[in-house]
Amino acid sequence: MFHITSCSNGTPTYRGTLPTRIQTMPSAFSQKAFLGGIQSDIITEADLLSILRRFGKCQLKWPKNDTSGSLIPGFCHVIYRDTRSVLELLKHCTHRQRSSVDYFLEIHTTTASTSSLFFGNNKRSTKLKMIQVVPWNIHDNICVVQQLDISSSGTKDWSRTIFISTLHGKISAYGLAVIMSQVFGRVSLAQLNTDKYGYPTGTATVLFSDSLGYMRAVAAGSIDIKCECFHKLLEIDPFLRENELCYYCPNIADNFCRNFRCLRSYCNSCWIKKHGTKPMASSSDHPPISRRQQSFPLATLN
Ligand SMILES: [Zn+2]
Ligand SMILES: [Zn+2]
Image (cartoon, rainbow, N blue to C red; front, side):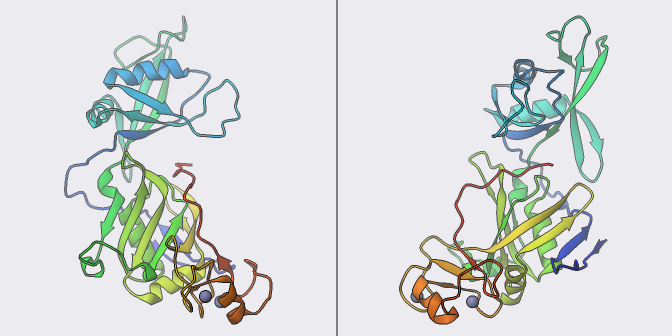
C-alpha cells in the first residue's frame, strides 16, 4: 500500500513501503558491498581486513572527509577482487528477513586481547558484535518498463529524462520507477548510475513515457520519500547533456529554465531576450539551472 500526499510547501511526497522487484533470476552481486555498524572501539581496520580477507583478496574504501581522527568511521565499502568472495562472505553471515534480507557478520571478541577477534559462533566469547553487510545486486541497476520508448540504438529521449540525486543506498531502479510513476506519471525506464564495480554512485536518470510526467517532476524539483528503511528528500533536475544547444539559436546553452512554461535550455543572450535582465536567482519565477558537475556524493545508507 502506498499513500501520496502533498506537503504544505508543495513538495510531492511518497509514503509507503519501498517497492521491491520479484526476483525472477538469481542475484548477481557486485564485488563491492557496504559494511555498516562498525564499532571503532572494538575493531581496527587491520582486524576487519584480516576477517574479510578470509573470503578473498579485498580492499576497504572509507568515506571521505573523516574527521574522527584515529578512529575508523562506522561504515565503509569492501571491494573484493572476485564476486565469488562476496557470496562466501554472505554464507558466513546470519540472515534476517525483513522487507529484504539483512546480513550480519558476527564478530566475537575475547576480553584477553582485541587481537583475538574471530567470527562464527562456535567459540567461547565474551562480546559479540554485528557488522551489517549490504550486498548490491547489479540486476537492480536498471528497470525497463516500456521498451518501445527506447530507440533501437539504446539512446533515451533526453527531452523526457530527469536526473535524480542523492539516492538512498537501498533504492533500486525498480523502486525508483514505481515511486516516480505513482507520484508524477508513467515511467519507461529508470537507471542508476554506477561505478566500475556496477555499484550505485547515488544518482539516477528516469525517462518518462510522456512529457507531462517529466514536466511535473522537473517543476517540483524534489520528492520526499519516506518508507520503512529511510526518509530522504531527492533532488530532481532535467537531464542536461553536455554541450546542450540553446532552444532558440545554435549557441551552446548556459542555463535551463525550470519554469513550467519554459522548461528549455537558453544561451545567455536568449535568456535575457525571453526573461529580461532581472538577476537570475533560484528563488525567481524562472529559476535557472546549469549542468551539474559530474562528481556526486555516494549513495548513503543513513
Ligand atoms: Zn540562444
Ligand atoms: Zn523561463
